[in-house]
Image (spheres, each protein chain N blue to C red):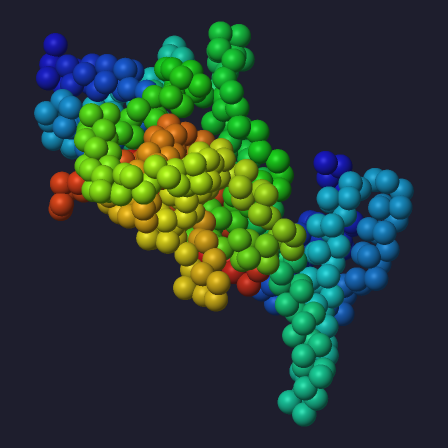
Length: 176
Length: 246
C-alpha cells in the first residue's frame, strides 16, 4: 500500500473516531505529517466518499472536518437514534440572524431591527448555546454585547461565518 | 405559502419591479401603482394571500410608492424643515421595514441550513456529544488542578474563619445567583479572567465555595470554559466555548 493510501486510511480512522470536527492542523499533529499532506488525503477521501456507494461523507464544519452521514439516509438513521433537536421559533431565528450578521450587537440594537422586545428570545438563544455575551458596549448603560458561539457553525453545518447565506440590506446590491 | 403575486405589466413579478426601481431602470409613467395595490387588496380580501405574504407585498408596494414619489416630486427645500423631517421619518420607517425583511429572509435561509444539517448525523448521538463537549473544554486541566486552586483560594482567607462562621448563613449564595455573579464578572472583564480573579470579591470561605460550585456547574453546561494561560501558567476562565473557535 502506498504512503498516500496509508495516510488516507489514518485520516479516515481519526475522523471516524473523533466526536467533533478535527482541524487540518490537529490531524497533522496527531499523524505527524505536514498539513499539505492532510489536505491531499482529505481531498482523496472526500472524492471516494462522494460516490453513491457510500453512506457517509467528509464535511468541512466549524473550521475542521467531520464524517457525517449523507442527508438521504436521515430517515433510516432516525429509526436507530432519536436525537434531541433544537427547534427554534421564528422569533428566535430572526434574533439569531440579526446577531449572526451584526455581531457583536446589543439587545437594544436587535430590538431596533425587530421592532419588538427580544430579551426573552435572546435568553433562549443563550440557553441553547447559539448566542453568548461577549462583553459590554462602550455606550451609556454599558449594555451587554451578544455574539454567536462556535456551536452555531456545528448547528448549521457551516465551516465559518463567511458561509452564512448572503444578506442584502436596503440600498445594497446582492454582491455586497 | 400561496405564492400569489399581482400581475405587473412588463415585469416578471412585483419583486422584479422593485429590483428594477432600485437601479433606476423603470418608466414610472407606465407603472400604475393604484392598480397593483387594488390587486393585492382584492387578493387579501378573498383570502388568497397569507398575512405574512401580504406584509411582504405591502412592503414592496410601499417601496415602489417611495421610489415613484422620489422620481416625480421635487426635492424638499431647505426652507421647509418640517417637510424635510417628515420625509426623513417616512424614509426611516421604510428603510427599517426593508431592513427587517432582509433579516427575516436571512432567518428563513438559516432555518433551511439547520434543517439540512439535522439530516446529517455524526458517529455519536448528539445527546452523548453534549456531555463529551463539556469534558473536552477542561482538557489539560484536571479536577486535581481545580481543587489545588480552590485550596489556595481558601487558604488566603483562613484568617477570617472565626468571624466568618458567625455570618456564614447570611452569606450563603444560592447556585443560580452565584452563576449570575460569575457571568457578570466575566462579562465586565471582557469575557475572561484568571481563576483567582473570579473569586477576588468573594470575601469569605463560604462564598468562595459557592462560587467554585457555580463555576463547576457552568463548565458542565458549557457557559464557561477553562484554559491554561500560557503567559502566567494559571487557569483562565472564559465565557462560552472558546475551544470550539479553533
